[in-house]
Length: 218
Image (tube, rainbow, N blue to C red; front, side):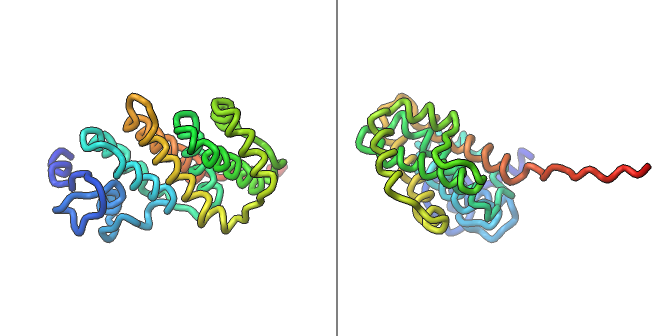
């Protein structure tokens, strides 16, 4: 294993033409998955891959090496279930909201509500349901939370619009909000965000369906 690690590309910012020039997080994932060299490999959900690229590119050179151990865990997390997009967006927005600057809080709070609304819709649950994660994040920014609720009551996003625009925007806003936040170690929070998103996706994608009991014959 050590010999293999010695020949692996080194994580660095941006895209790379080949492994000799280094690798971003998702390029290394494509390498380990045996796919064509790419920062958009098929082995990972597109939105999770986008988060990984953003975390990679916005982490300092000194801290980026700590991301390497997460690369294998992202391989195979592919799905077209919109719940995955919604859960990633929710994880990002709830992580960033309590630490982001005031001017970013409204957009992030709207992202929280949009992700929760989409999850409720997909689950057939009542509109307005909030998870404990979301409640805690919204309580940290009561003014932005109230503004977001007023805005969200007047808007209804489609599933297509959520996947194409709202969820990617939530991921982008969240990473920028963390990077620019006045906190001691944004690199550590970015890493925890990516870890949490990977755990969420693993639970959604790899959890087996409940087994159907076979009939018992007398």
